[in-house]
Image (cartoon, rainbow, N blue to C red; front, side, top):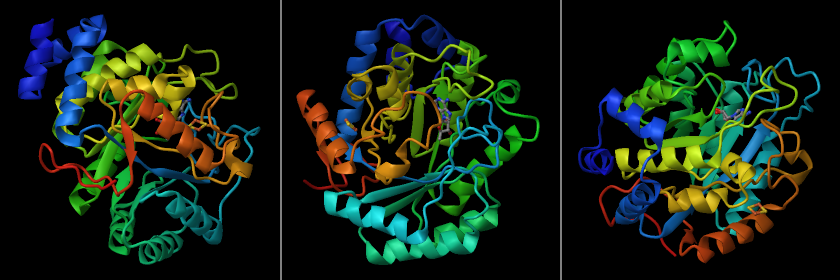
Length: 352
Ligand code: 5AD
Ligand code: FES
């Protein structure tokens, strides 16, 4: 089995059967993690990038079976942040040292393309040294292009699964796998630094599906891949399903690091939710990004995609100092800077 891990580290690709056997058995964990850590260090040293996450709306027109803010969850508390509130979050974040703002929200028609484009250009003109990342779901290519022209740098859109039949288990018939994939290829074509990703341990997921995710990522060549465990939400059709584990998640994260050593890979809040040491374990398996929450504390609990989400009561400054401590204790350091993908080994594009 070390042979497969070595092959992946060397050639950055495996056959579907090879992926399945690595994923199904999870052999040689420590060997894999050490190799993944070394790969991350080659590009990023012991730096961990921070992104300030602004969860700007909990309204969503979609009805994904796994998600707590799905349209049919009548019990979900809904809120929207106005332009000034979002800019306030950026101001606070900038003061704390954040140089990337991630605007994440449900698919909410209130935020028209005009509103988004205006907001993006305002953030970019106030903070020209910052990157703006959008995570606002599926849009027509023309809308993506407008956001890019307004100055947005990155776009996150998890593909959720690369297997069409599995996609239909996770989503209602009105949503389409083809449209999801179309969005990702549009984003890449336009020039965004693009992120895809999936949940680990989602209902119906098999090692074969995960192998397809790996092959999909090999082909798409995204700049970022976000993965986190599926965590059931009590007011969704998947309330009674089992969740994903930290073990499964960090194993896949390490495989991703070897697949594409310069990837930006977050140790996600969901990983920190299923295991109190999840984010540290993620970094020790090759993750190099953490995304503390910059949303106003008053709305945090309302952005509940899954149950028991951590950090919903903590001010951004508290989360940041907590994470700094967590990273330092495992020999890593949080760095300020946009945190763009490294262009070459040893090329860390940030300071401090
Ligand atoms: N558990 C874990 N992750 C979830 N997401 C949505 N619902 C859940 C859940 N119950 C993830 C999806 C989505 C991202 C914003 O959050 O992958 O793309
Ligand atoms: Fe939020 Fe630790 S990161 S409290």
